[in-house]
Image 1: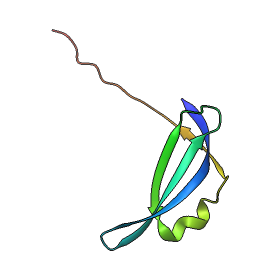
Image 2: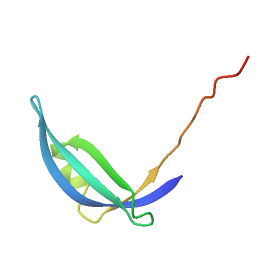
Image 3: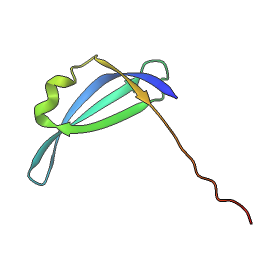
Image 4: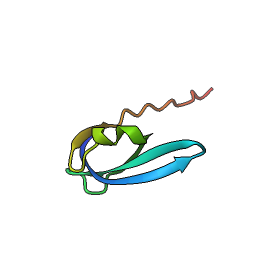
Length: 67
């Protein structure tokens, strides 16, 4: 399943010695979709507000065989 989303927030966070950025996305076609991506703070320019992406959910499920 694929959903379109746009960047709606940036939040600076710190984990130990690392300066990170939490990038928040909201779905454009599916209003309930919320995605957060944690990246290096230096990559902030790669995720400008309003830029879009496609979120691809490739779900695999293994079912045990009955004996």
